[in-house]
Length: 141
Image (cartoon, rainbow, N blue to C red):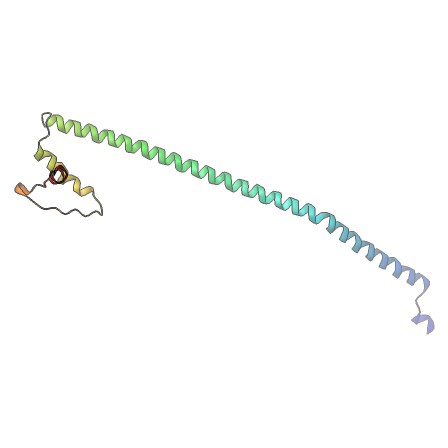
């Protein structure tokens, strides 16, 4: 029975080797973590920087496309204004080159539909036409 409780020399040697192997493995693991963790942090920051750069590049491309769209819209608005001016010139030509006060008042009334949400108080006068000269008399006094 005494032999059963006591470990043999060979078993003791195997236990010591296993303990040493576990100890060496733990020390190697700690060493790998101490060496690898700083390298991982550098890699992680590099990847975060690349992601931030890609995001900034995409935002820059979006702004460029918005600017191009705005430029195109302005070009189209300018073309529309040119066509409007050509139409106005043609209208003047049809009116025999002279704009009468009555025609100017008619144009003023017609443009009131383009005011959107603005409020204009319209006081009809003779012939139901607005007085366009009311502001001039007040400033000449």
